[in-house]
Figure 1 (cartoon, helix red, strand yellow):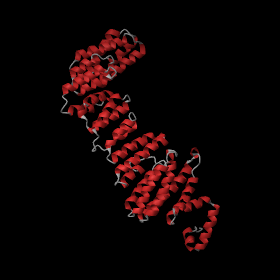
Figure 2: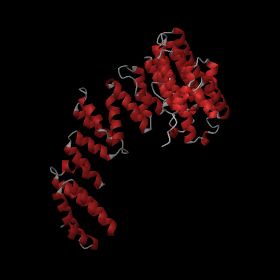
Figure 3: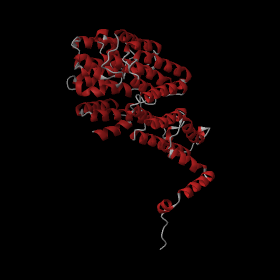
Figure 4: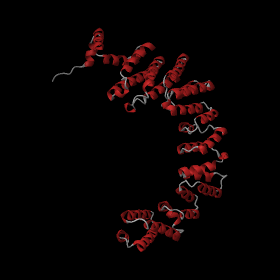
Length: 448
């Protein structure tokens, strides 16, 4: 049996000058090998900024000019080189070579900043900026050198001003890192960061929502919630603002002026998503003094969320009687709201008679059926007559198989709710009134 060559032994027994000559010739013939060698051993050399930029340019040249031509093979090659560099930066950090670690990760970030919003998500580049900012924060935390920390702060400011600096992650992004690193001058930093973000809104409008959200996070992180009032006026009606505001630290109070403004915006707003988000903010920060019950009832009829009613019941300043009256009055003044929400409110508040009276005015039988377990045992005759009248009215103008299917659906739903007596009553009514119809003769035989 032929013995396999042991490459490792051959390398160990080779003369250094022979290996160097071999590599030189190989680099001349194979450009890819040159790239791989330089990138993989980048951290082994004391490279200056210019040298390292030349290495990054090699990676950049691997990216097609037209990103529509990017293939998985090309993307994997670039991504693997970047991951290799990130790993090398981590190695530098672990051996306390913080300067080299920073040089590597800063150049990687500049490259990623150019392409992170352009490369398709399927190529899996989206986690790389997060890893870089995480590593950058660790280097800043571990390094004892004030000069390096200053360089890192300057780097982030330059990245924001000269690059895109899109905040893909809520916390690990250049804006949040600067807040962590420059804690000594919050007012000046807030002004500078908000200025950056205002410029970004103009320069890169495709990410308007992200810029607005980041403005809110900057003020929240720096405890400048008083400045949120101006943002609420500037971005009134933009969901991104309210989304971000809803995630602010609930331990920090919003100003009364902002809460008053939000209440006004809630009333004026037509978009249901925005209204609900504003309501969540008001609810989160506690606004009983702002006549919250009025907004809560409006929000309930928009969403049907009975938890809103539960909170109102728990408010010691609101009695059940006034709550019930307010719900009934709101329903009467807003004919556009869904009837079902009124019925669900009466059920939740245990107002059986009001529920029965409201359901007796309903014209859609399927709106009544979910509440049979509440009203049928107590108001049996009234419910039987109401459902019989609705069925008779329907069958007076509907015929054939469609009519039969409709009635079958009603009876099946009543069966699922285990109301056998009601089902039996309705079958007898149908048999008496419409038993002469051919399709219903067959139905009677199946059901009896």
